[in-house]
Image 1 (cartoon, rainbow, N blue to C red):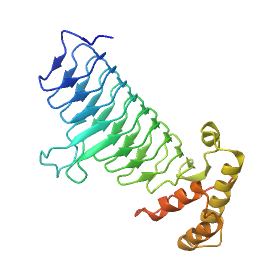
Image 2: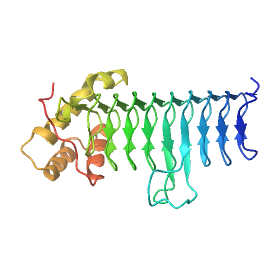
Image 3: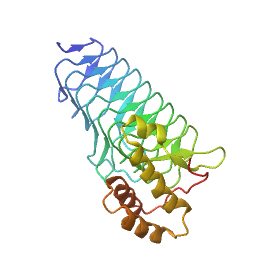
Length: 265
């Protein structure tokens, strides 16, 4: 398919546009931008310098990406925004590029970021991340693979969200959310249990899910402090890749982890 650029679009001469790209009316693409093949960019989109967009992405009306970070310490250093293949950015999404601290903001492939979401500077999102309307990620947030975040969630800066987790709408995760978790609660955000439906959809067997529930009981409900719980999990599940990922995630954090609220189903 031939590239189709509307006559009212403004594209800097240094921008690199792939093949089969569609660019809608009144869109602005600044210098030092790279757009992959077969992307669809709607009307009134703004793509700022240092943006690297993968193949097959779709950007809807009014999105603004690659903007300078909203960080008072930023002094114009050269930084970037990287977005993987087949990622969708819906209407009026805003994404900032990195600061000198990390140098980049990075979003993986096959992500679905819905209307009015904000991804701040230096965030790192894995693959297959879904963010519902009006989610706001503060600076330096890290989101794993296959994560779902419900609408109107605000995530505190430097927080990590582990692989396969789901965050309920309007929750407020202020510490790390461990892999496989369902996080939410009315009035007080806590870990509710494992993301059973999400794990089933990702092909986790009943045995794998059961082992994760056993690990959660040790981590959150056992008669152990956190360090002893991690030692116990290492001993009990030394050959289980899921549990080893969970242990590594907890060990790798500095903010602490969200704790359990309800009994594990």
